Amino acid sequence: MKLPFRVVELARFRSAVLTLVPDGSTDNLVRLVRFRAAASGQPGDDCRKDILRQAQSDPLPDDVFLLPTIPQLPDVGPAVVLLRELIGIPFGSICFRSYDAISKDHFLRIGRLNPIIKYAISQAFGVLYTRIGLPETYENRRMAAIEQISSFQWE
Image 1 (cartoon, helix red, strand yellow):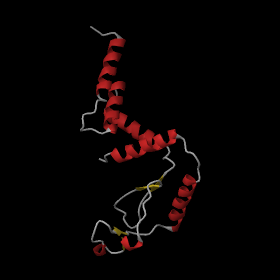
Image 2 (image 1 turned 90 degrees about the vertical axis):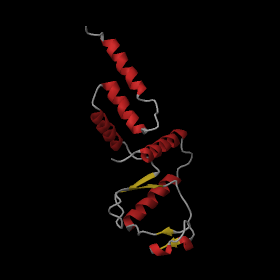
Image 3 (image 1 turned 90 degrees about the horizontal axis):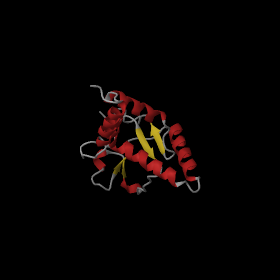
Image 4 (image 1 turned 30 degrees about the vertical axis):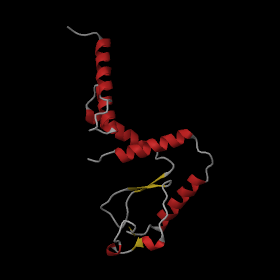
């Protein structure tokens, strides 16, 4: 006996909603992939690829600067500069050799930015901080992007 279309649709929606329940062992991206796979009936790998493709086409938030590589650390891969996350470091706490960094209060300088990149980061910083009264929706979008990046687990 073939079930009516709406019963199948409701059953699919119910199983999709159940995937959203946090279980502590999965992150938000995994739950989103499971939800879309259950709701659409597509394989999970296809949904994951679609989500990642869509995320890659979306522009980065205005307070994020992407460094494709760090020349002195080519094995590290890309790095993200968060232009709003500023900290001041006393000059005496900066170490140029690893054996000089003997405590948590020391910071090891690992390299120097290419002048073109340095000016691009300075320009992005200036553009961000010359804006007046950023809307709350922007702040919420920025926080969501940061949470998504920090919770993503690379395979």
